[in-house]
Amino acid sequence: MPESRIAVVGATGAVGAVTLRLLRERGYENVRAFASARSAGTTLDGGLRVEEATPEALAAGDIDLALFSVGTSASRELVPHAVRGGAVAVDKSAAYRLEPGVPLVVPEVNAARALEHDGIVANPNCCTIPLTCVLKPLHDAAGLVRVRVSTYQSVSGAGAQRMEQLRFEPQDQHNLAMDWTWDGDETDEESKIRAEAQKILELPELPISATTVRVPVLVGHAEAVWVELEEPISAEQATAVLGAAPSVQVVDVPTPGDAAKTDQVLVGRIRPDRAAENGLALFLACDNLVKGAALNAIQIAELLLDRARVAA
Ligand SMILES: NC(=O)c1ccc[n+]([C@@H]2O[C@H](COP(=O)([O-])OP(=O)(O)OC[C@H]3O[C@@H](n4cnc5c(N)ncnc54)[C@H](OP(=O)(O)O)[C@@H]3O)[C@@H](O)[C@H]2O)c1
Image 1 (cartoon, protein in one colour):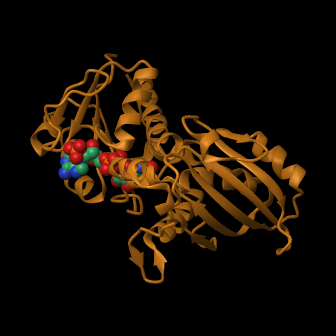
Image 2 (image 1 turned 90 degrees about the vertical axis):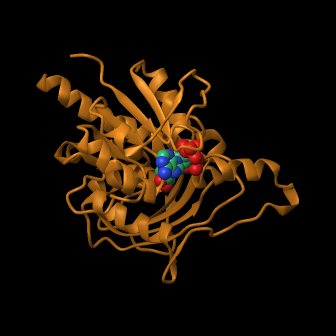
């Protein structure tokens, strides 16, 4: 079977740049870079020339797999053209995540769902991915009853321009922010974490309450998590369960700095929650551009490519 033809759409962005790096590191060579008319014609660090992501270019029939990181409205407009041209699209925006029939996949949690696609597989939010990597093994071990989470999200979660702004912002102006769109009395990030985690874990009634906070850190999201479980589970047992979970690494104190550029979800501070029966408190950190976005999408793509190879 010839090597798959891969398009990275949004290649000039924060996630797109990491996607191209990871594809290079994994040995993929048949890769094209797409972005808007603004950066079409420029040449990227790795030497790729950026093409304009027009509907015609995406539908031309010469792309097998399209990895999109262009934002929700551009994804709504462009993804269907790539699918029309015969590509499978892995989309990292919120455009399709909650659509019935579109798989929303974290390979460590629900890999089999990826194969049920009808042209589009959605990649979850950058906080939902590490959260579900940790919740799934705890659910399997002791049954989730309730989840509360508070996030500490880096500015790279808001894109490359926000990273530049933080680099040039005087330190005495650094602050916390809740810079998402409001969805009633929650941020849309908070409601996304709840709805996406319920869909991925296939626990539609699981109560999840989130508070999302932007912090003046360049890369790496952290989350304080409180879970209530059906069965009692000690901190030692939970540590053993999480230590054996795929893509999870138990450390003493997870920080965004330690998580940056790693593939793992770092988990630590695992202890009883003194405010709940059968409760656990823990802290996690993850590179939002790697496992929180680009790597998770490439892992999904590899599930699809493996199936194509078996079928060929
Ligand atoms: N950052 C994260 O941690 C993270 C994590 C998970 C998911 N995501 C999602 O990934 C997407 C991109 O995020 P990002 O942080 O990489 O944003 P970003 O740094 O702002 O990059 C956006 C990219 O999309 C391109 N683009 C924008 N509008 C376009 C259009 N109409 N047609 C073609 N290309 C277009 C831009 O190209 P130009 O250079 O031409 O403007 C750029 O390459 C968003 O949907 C975001 O929600 C981000």
